[in-house]
Each structure stands twice: as C-alpha cells, then as structure tokens.
Length: 331
Image 1 (cartoon, helix red, strand yellow):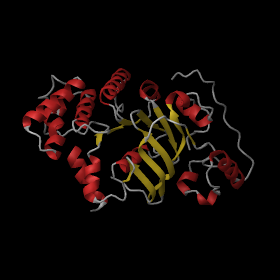
Image 2 (tube, rainbow, N blue to C red):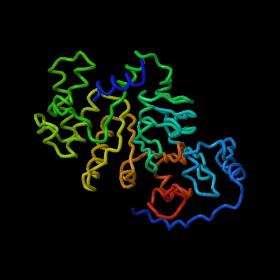
Image 3 (cartoon, one colour):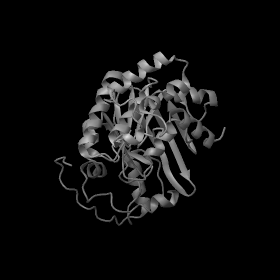
Image 4 (cartoon, rainbow, N blue to C red):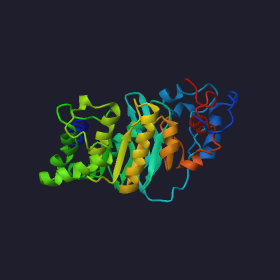
C-alpha cells in the first residue's frame, strides 16, 4: 500500500511574561565553521559535522559565522516516565528541503507534552510520523516499543486505533451533525450497537460542553465549538495517545485558555499521553508537563516544563520569553 493510500484510509477513518532578562544579540564568531562544529559537538555529544555536511536549506537559516547546531546542546532531561513514542535518529526530506535531520526524543506516558518551535521547523511532520502517514528516510519511530515504519498494513491499522487526533480546524464532516461526526469512528471501526454508540458519544460530548449541540451542523458552530466537537470525536475510541495539531489556532485568548483548561480536565480523568503542537507560549505555561523545543529538524532541549522555563540555553530562553533579540532571527 502506498503512503497516499495509507493517508487516505486513515483520514477517512478518523476524519509573555517570564521575568527573564532580555537576551543580547550574540556577536559573530570569527572561527571557521568546522571549529564551531567541533565545539557544538563537544557540548551536545553529536558527531562533528562540517558545514558541507549540513543540508543547504538548514544552512540558509543560519547566520554567517555560526554553526546551525551550536545552540542544540542535546539535553534531554529525565521526565520520570517511560516513552509512549520515541524518535531515533529520524531524517526526513521533501525533495531538497530537509525537515527532520537526526531527530532524537521521546514522548512520556501519562503526561501532557508540547512540541514547540519556530514555524516550518517540522512539528506537524512529527505527528504524521507517529501515526504512519509519513515514514522516515532514515532512523526509526517507535510507538510503545514497536517500529512504525516496519509494521505490516494490518498491524499499522490496529496501531492507529491507539491514537485520537484533533486537527487544526476540527476537520468535521460538513454533511453530518455533531452527534454523527462524533459517532463516525465508532461506526467505522467497531461493532458496537447504536445504543452503545449513543452512550459513548453523549458522555464525550458532555465532557467537552456540547451536550446541547448534538443536532447542530458544523456551519452552525463557532470555531471553538468545532474544536471541542473534534476533541470529543478524538476520544470516543478511548485512545492511549491523543494528538493536537495547533488546537489554539484561530482562537481568541479567552477561548484558548478555556480549551487548555478542558485539555487538562479531560487528561486528568482519562490519562494517557497527550501531544500538543503549538506556537502559543502561554498555552505551554498553562498545560505542559513536558516540553520539547524543536529547531532546524532537531531537539534543542527537552524535559519537564518547569525546568525548561528556567533553562540557561539562550535559544530556549529567547523562544519561551518571546524576546526579539537572541539566536533566532528572521533567517
């Protein structure tokens, strides 16, 4: 089965304030790129990489005189749990554009994790690798210890049932009301009776505050309501892992805060590994137990959120405080 067929089958089935001091602009380093690479390797434990070993599109994002990975210290702080999902030396390119370039990190069980980083750095690509919509060019992705790229089609289909996915806009079927949208995965993937389906859907819709909107069509819902309906649908199969692709996109600050509160409440009741892709630092402060900061296709630093918000790494400090000056520019 091709990647496109797998993609279509899956979608059809599921359809600042920090108190940190401002960070000064770093001076250009007079050393050669190779010398900088050696120092970066020494800090992070990476193998030494000369400039000509780095993909061109990543070099294009790098200031003159700096090595692309000089801020990637490779610190993966202990999170106190086992990994639900693990990326091992993952590389992924689309044509000449390298998105993931030796990605290593794990998503802990039983916690709300957030993958954050600049736009276009590969956060959503990570989610697609978790569910087998994309496969790495090199490396491996493990879900509960099993290699996703090496799964047979039947095993992959079963593995995907472990996941619930909330897409950016809710991804509701426009021809179905809220109840039927929520019931769709149960009707598609289980042999449950309509009475059992109704009990599950009504319970999940109550959890997200939509008990009174069962008969509404998607075009009758606000943006926040569509996201909550998508959240309910993501939960009906009792997933072990729930993925949120920028759930706060398009929401005002109050509704973003309410959605964060809802994610925390539902996680407290159901448990599991929740993975949130976001740019919103306030959401990270409110919700995250665990943070992974992704830039240029690799993790700069990952670990408990409380520790990363106090990280000495200049890039992490700049990104989590929203400072204009620091290692990240307009490159």
